[in-house]
Image 1 (spheres, helix red, strand yellow):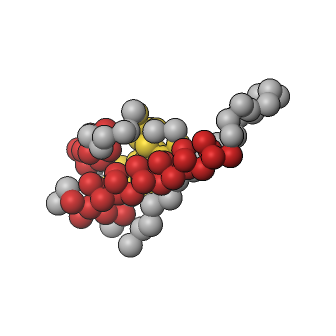
Image 2 (cartoon, rainbow, N blue to C red; image 1 turned 60 degrees about the vertical axis):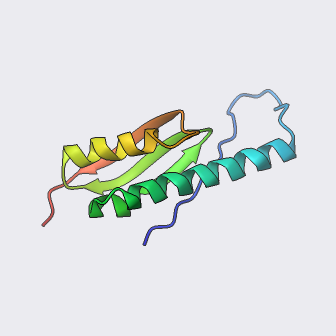
Length: 100
């Protein structure tokens, strides 16, 4: 079973961030909660290949990684992720690979 995690990125600019530690912590918890929600919805979709998708969330952007056996399931995973309240976009990094 795959466990979902959230990624938090640090800006590359040389400018100091005005974000406080409390805000970063809240953002991190929100991203984790969203990743768990997306993972849950993928599991509940009824399509077994979607259970093994890795889900990361960064600033409300869901990142999907893994392999699925068809382009239909790749698109379905994206649609499921976008249907989760709080997700603003999806980066679909799923590979389509025929099962061996």
